[in-house]
Image (tube, rainbow over all chains, first blue to last red; front, side, top):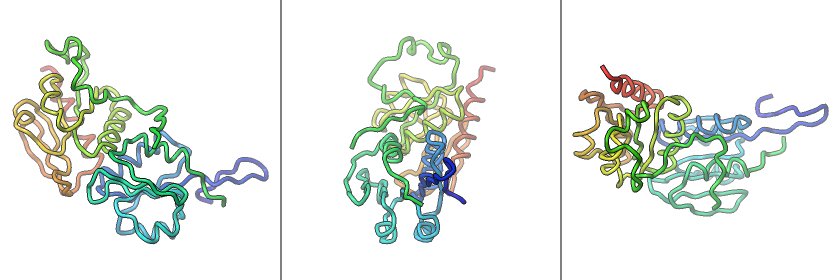
Length: 122
Length: 143
């Protein structure tokens, strides 16, 4: 079963799942690779921004990182980052329904969010 | 927002354009023997991300990151073998053999120059960047 880590006889814990759909390709690939390398217990999925909604419905990610948040993301994903929308420096972080804006996001901000978010119980 | 712990994040030299590097005025490459890549593109998280990936996958390369407006000064001080930036400058063209203008003005295309040969990428990918790093490393080798 993808996205599920078997911890013990009775314990099933869903691994954290991150969907990367930000523009442009090398940026998306870069952040995905960094998260995979530095947080190997996290499942990272890459998608074109055009398939973002489909992938959200299909993969039920715990976190979406995208360049333009959609209503599907807002409604269905507990944590999301609208990273550099329209290439502007101000990004929006939504963590468990609470939104904040972050100027000049650092890579460590994204890693910190990955660390703090809770996986959905499966 | 709290700045997070990057744990094993490779640690490219960050934004040190304002700090002189010991011995670099004479010849920084002779001092370390490593090819040097200067990252000066924006936005920041992507600059840091690409630097981290190059650091991880090309550990023999020395990577520095600077804000874009510190690029020209850093080129003079740091003598990089390769620069990744969002906007090329005359100083860059005149002094660096390998450079990538990554997504200029946020467009999807990018331009790379390798030893005077210019190439355009419709949408550059991470393996392309790594390949250019490899070429810069080759060109940096003494004959």
